[in-house]
Each structure stands twice: as structure tokens, then as C-alpha cells.
Image 1 (cartoon, rainbow, N blue to C red):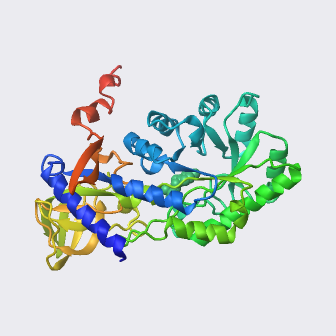
Image 2: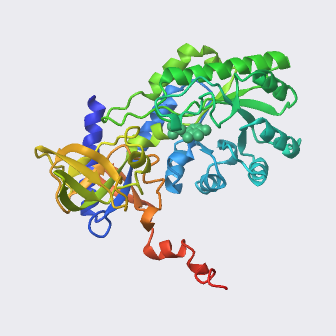
Image 3: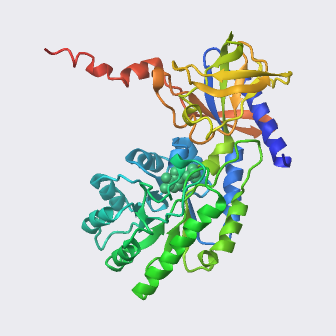
Length: 440
Ligand SMILES: *Cc1c(COP(=O)(O)O)cnc(C)c1O
């Protein structure tokens, strides 16, 4: 662990104590998500610093934390926003992103979504050749939106198949290496002078930097070829996607944005010589380590010789970890009911959630100080894709999310998302159509 690691551990410990004292977790609120505002601002500064001297728009991947106050904070820090649905686009606009700083990606954009994006001036990366044909009909001389094509460089998968978008058979983008595909892409650009951008996103978690750099290198070479063929600088920008992996094993940030930018500068120097403007689309690496979940231990029991702590952190807030525990292991840290870190001798325990299926475990046979009813478990590194993407299984409510920062040595909280109420659960489950199935 480096010096930053200790700082961030103690920041979490202070925040947990303050959250308990403020009544944000406890019997009434058995689970909540937390976002470290100072941490987010400092991570964004690291990203800006890594690409210093290059013309670049860093568009935050909204799906990593689709929460309007979080998006607002990122807009305030000078980021743009990458969206992949009408909902994410509306959230980005509500957060105050200028349309020209928003990028719409998605493999299934509807006609209406494409039309809206073009009318607003939101950039669009077409996923396939048929989508380019849809754009042919929508583009007018007044279209201001930057338009590009997503390419699948087919450089291979990382360690998590479900997260790898550059495998030979990925559903994303136009495959680069299939027979005839490269020529089709070059012809598609030649036929469309308004097409000025190439987009690549190799994957999300589990992709080593070299694999990401391979994909970006392939797309950079394609840009050069398209421009040579066009006899002009048609492709003016390259969107290099996100996917910088997050270290879930301890508090150190590795790899860093600076290390990533250094790999790219070495492997694809032409990206940085001023001929192309760049876009990035980081999500997890901006938010992951800047958030955590606190959940209360409701019961402790023994079964078949195993100790099980039944907590309020399960598949509804840690979906990937519960369904793919090997790919998405999370740390669990034990606190007592007053919010103080427990440091007793470790005992092997399962940390289970509240969902009614046997596999609802956020950790199995984990060595942890012995948990007791009323204690709290903290799941670090869950600032992206965890509490911000809840799963509504068992009609469990979307938990509240709070931001926090430190001012004059004190931790202060700010509301991000109000917890879902039971009344809202009923109303969102079709209450207004209660009798609709009774007609005979
Ligand atoms: C999910 C996604 C991202 C963000 O990935 P992270 O791993 O969170 O950085 C960026 N671009 C596209 C197209 C995506 O689908």
C-alpha cells in the first residue's frame, strides 16, 4: 500500500463514523451508498493532468454512475458525458452538460434517439453500417453534431468475457478484420464527408493496458488510411473509449491515468502530435474507488459448521459480485454499530445479503473480525456500477445515496439520491393497473 492508500482508508473510516452519527445508516436505513466528493474531484484532476497538452474531451460514461448530482459534479470539473440510452441522455442534460459535450453510443439506437441527438447537437458514434444509412437520411447541411463510427478492432478479450467488447464476435461496432470489412469502412467514410470521427472501446474491467493500446493503435491506423484515401483530413477526432481497470484488492490506484497515457504515448505517438483531437469515456476508473456501501448486519447464524452474517448488502446493490463472484470480488470491512472499525481476530464467515436465493453472498468464507447483529459491513470500491445501478429483485428498495466531503476536519453529507419508499415500489409495480387483468 502506498501513502495514498492509508489516506483513503482513514477517509472511509471517518466517513463511516460520521454517517452513523448523522443517522444515515442504522435500523431504519440498513443500507446506503456513499460518494467521496473530494476524492472524485481529485481523480478528475489526475485524468486532466495525464492528458495535459492534448486537445481532449473526457466524457464520463454515465452508466457507471447515472446519478444527476454526480454528473453535475463531473460537469463542474470540466468533463463531458458519454450516454447510451434516452434515459442517460436526459440525465446528462438535466445535469447541465452542453449537448456538444455529450456523446451518444449504444448498439441499439432507435430512429427517434438518433433524430433527437442530431437535433440537439449531441455527438453520435454509429455502431454499424445500417446505422450509418439511418444517419444518411437525418443529416442535413445544418447538422452540427460530430458523427463517427464505432470500430471493433477484434484484438481479443480481456479476463472477463462479458466485459470484453473487442473479441472477434463482440456485438459492438463494425468489425475491422472480417473479410472485406476494412474496405467497406473506408468506402463508408469516402461516401460520407460528414463522418469525421472513429470510436473504439476495447472493454470494461479485465482488459490489460496493452490490449487497450492494441485496439486504439488499430483504429488510429484506420484513421490514417481513411484520410490518405480521402486525400484530406476527414477523420479529425478519435474517441478512445474508457475501460481503465480498477484495482479491487486494496486501496492503491493502479493502473493510474498517468500510466495509461504513458503507454498510449509510447504505443500510438501519432495520437498526440496534434493532428487529432481525442475523446475518452472513462467510468469505473473515475468513480469506483470514490464510493462505498454501508450495510447493517441483521442476523448472525451458523449452518453446517459455517458462520453466516446476514446483511443488507446483496444482489440488489452488488449485482455483478453476487452473480459472478470470481470476476468481481469485493473487499468487506467490519465496523461496529457505532461506526468504529473492528479489529478483532479474524473468523471465517460468509457475508450474505437479503435476497431470497441461496447464492446471494457478497463474500464466501472470508476472514473478518467476528460480525454481530447491528454491526456494519463496508464494501469499498463500489462507487461505480454498484449502488448506482440497483437491481429491483424481491422488491427491495433502491437505497439512498449520499455524497460526503471534509471541511474544517468535519465530514459533511449532501443528498444524492433519496431512498425508494415502499409506496413508490407499489406504484412502480403497476398499482394504477390493479384490476387490468380481471376482465373476463
Ligand atoms: C461502459 C462503456 C464505457 C466505460 O467503461 P469503464 O470501464 O467504466 O471505463 C466507455 N465507453 C463505452 C462505449 C462503454 O460501453
